[in-house]
Amino acid sequence: MLLVALLFPVAIEIPYDGVDQDGDGVDLVDVDRDGFVGVLAFGPDCADNNPDVHPGARDVPDDLVDADCGGSDRRDRRLWARRR
Ligand SMILES: [Ca+2]
Ligand SMILES: [Ca+2]
Ligand SMILES: [Ca+2]
Image (cartoon, rainbow, N blue to C red; front, side, top):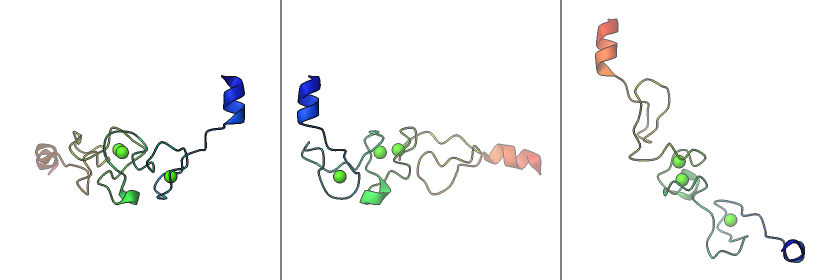
């Protein structure tokens, strides 16, 4: 297998460039493989390097991470009401 790997090196796939470098038939547009295409390929995944972040993911309030790609981190209204 090592000889085969040396004779036919697998090309490194460059995501979002519209070119299928590794010959699997498609350009790589879901780098973290969470099932959502990255925004750089006009998909909905706002963090295509983090499988925990995608539309529909649970957005933990006030952790400064927009986990559901809703545009901003969720705020815990009860917590903010208490602080006032
Ligand atoms: Ca590519
Ligand atoms: Ca993704
Ligand atoms: Ca993601």
